[in-house]
Length: 244
Image (cartoon, rainbow, N blue to C red):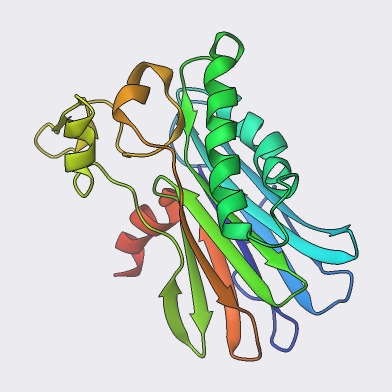
């Protein structure tokens, strides 16, 4: 399944929101930022495993835009858990307002530990994550684990706000943890021949060989900011063949 979510300032028209049976849009309370989201079911026979967050909230006098994509595998329990808890865990960190970077990193780690401790209920599956928090319409914090991606357009130029965590680029970390990277002819590199990402939430059976610490970037949102797009790999890696 492909999941697409975007936000942009209201001084230009909202674009890129596909028409589907599971899409929507909205705007900030101050009406300065618009957002939209769309879920498109792929050809896979398994049930939907992608979850999202797209909303604005007011906390302690601040307006926060909360956006996220969670791309699950081997079931939907872990991405569903992330949808309910990850952003909340970030915001309840005591240091969030003074040190968002540290708070995001700590919350990602704590959330993964909670998932692993509840593996009897959540199963052995896992999920990627990309989260975006917009503070007062001015400061943007993006974090990711896995290969769901965030791209910011600034003055018409694309700026990648996330890092793809793939076994081929993090082979050293995997091997240092006792794992290995392999792939069958025509397939993508996989951790222990199984998982196509090198960082993920959950995946208890592979956890000793995986990381769940996020890469984090921040940016100022101003009149030069066009749009932020966050999406699962179905958009970035599959759709690109149609675009080329």
